[in-house]
Amino acid sequence: MARQATRRSPRGAAMRPSTTPLSAGDASPAHGSIRRPRLKGRLRGYLKGHFQALFLSLGRVSRNPLSSMMTIAVIGIALALPAGLHVALKNVQGVSAGWDDAVQISLFLNQGIEDAAASRLVEQLSAMSTIEEVVHVTPQQALGEFRQYSGFGEALDVLDENPLPNVLLIRPTRAASEPLMVEPLLHELRNLPAVEMAQLDMEWLKRLYAIMAIGERGVLVLAVLLALAVLLIVGNTIRLAIQNRRDEIEVQKLIGATDAFIQRPFLYSGLWHGVLGAVMAWLLVTLSLWLLHGPVQRLSLLYNSNFSLGSLEPLAVLVVVAVGGLLGLLGASLAVGRHLRDIEPT
Image (tube, rainbow, N blue to C red; front, top):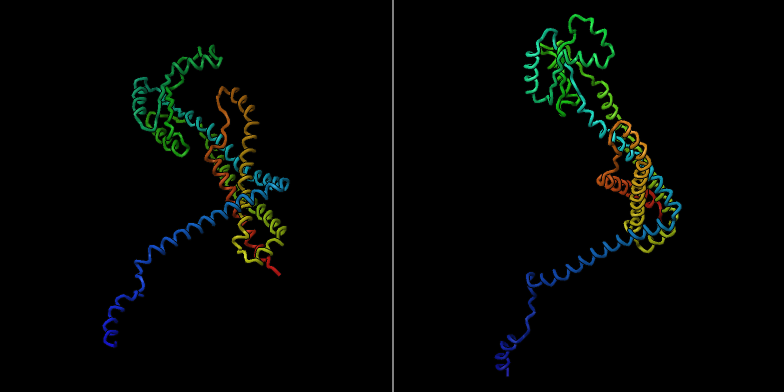
């Protein structure tokens, strides 16, 4: 019996089920297939929570229409001021863009230069890359124009000779008409041997460009100051909302809600206030331009111009909305981070 048992023992051992664990490579597909659904479920739940908080905060804003509208209106006015000044500067720059083409340099040639020498100088100047057009006004043409428009035709008849010199009217190119570029050109033309005097009336254009530069810097400073005002407005609104929901926040902390979960609706509330305030700013700027369109159109017709007021471009509208939302979110974040830590369940 013992011998038979010993003979069967190898067969029994061979038939015994193996208890060797599976290798890591054999188990990885099963674990990976389990881990991927878990990650997808967590991501889906995370996004669902944010969407719920987003629309829940919008509902709370709409449930208090009077106070929310007042806050949105104040934010809209604060954002409309720099946006409106930006549009005004763009319109002024659009008007002055055509004035650069009217820049003209008058060269008065030396007395006694013949028309042939003046014509050669015209050809020489026309070949310069910074000059668009050169017009030669002979002494006879200048005297005829002066006789026609001055009203002193009879007095000119007593003159023995024509006192007027050859004049070259030079129109620089658009690039050379800039205030910083036209000065070197004027200095170069003034040093020509045949030129007695070079005249350029550019002081008014320089002053205009200086005023527009100050305006651009002023708009930037005003935008920064009003952005700080928007931060304070949104922060104060969120602070009041936190104080009104203090008991609710204490209960949420008692049942284990995290700070990120609690502050999420307040952050989205600040975002909604900023975005809606930016939309209000766009409406205010559009309404203001519409009210000014008629008078500006009538004024431009008096100057035989087809100028019309330009409005906010689509990209500028997107920038205003994005800045408004960002300021609202930042202001809410500062208020929530400060006041939420002071609320602890007792």
